[in-house]
Amino acid sequence: MTENNNNSKSTDVFGVGNAMVDILALVEDNFIQEHDLNRGSMTLMDAEKQAGLLHKLEHHSLELGSGGSAANTMIAIVQSGGKGFYSGKVSHDTNGEFYRQDLLEAGIRFDVHPASNHIGSTGTCLVLTTPDAERTMCTHLGVSTTLAPTDIDVDLLSRCQYSYVEGYLWDAESPRKACVETMEQSKRNQVQVAFTFSDSFLVDRFADDFHKLVSDYCDVLFCNADEVRRFCELESLTECANKIGQLVDTAFITDGANGCLVVQNQQVSSVSGFPVHAKDTVGAGDAFAGGVMFGLTNGFSAAKAARWGNYMASCVVQIHGARLDKSMAHLVPEIIGH
Image 1 (cartoon, rainbow, N blue to C red):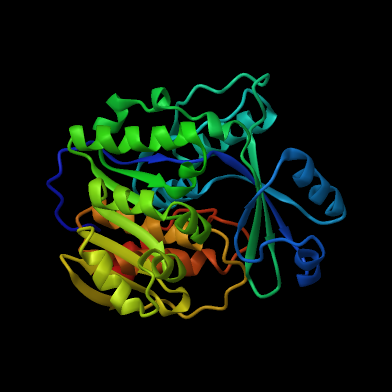
Image 2 (cartoon, helix red, strand yellow):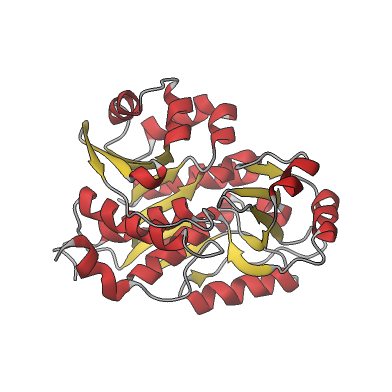
């Protein structure tokens, strides 16, 4: 099923991110407009404002799941046939226990000690999907902002081939330090570092920091077309890819239905996507990254890893929610052309 992999590390990926319980709802366009939400992006809000939106949705069907960008990616890795650890902070509350059990049932090891519920509640992300499959996220970070460098288990990290860190961590001071700690410990322990920008608003707010992270730590970078255009301050996607190639060894730039660009050793190539009818784009980028990380940790070329990532993303956009409900590992040889 996989190409030769001589890496001696026993586990594929050590993921770090904001641990959030996803609350999924299908809404009409006017709901986004009426509540002045940032359509197609993520908006941070306090618990009261999020609760107000949930009250407006009391007659809608809601679906819960363990989420957060990096957690979704870890789940996609496992569903591809890989394995990994995950670090994220939840509270000692009902949502926190749901989150822990949901990850364990998905096959992800999750060992971070929960925070006291006196400190705050487990983070929640209200994901609103409109009929055009666009998703708008309303996020209350909760105790996810208390993730600290001491929560990073260096022994577990040292057993992995890659660490995978989400850009959303950069929005609060303590998780930001945990992000840097993960990357520094990765370098000390010969663990490759993968980083995702996560969202355009983060690129806008932390452009200088992200430039430094990419240059100083990253072996693999994930971003979408909009994020990389803002990061590079260029309109041409090819020019952006060339510029990224000067900063990092390997990058994957997703471009929706067009598939993605792969940048490796300053060479740019295109990997086509899979034509499907998208119902919901929630988690597409996360699933793509999970597919790619599975491929890289199992010795696939960057192009083959990207093809599997494109396939995982194409499957996720055909369902409501951020992750698939079954293993996809049996399809790997067929999709990548073995």
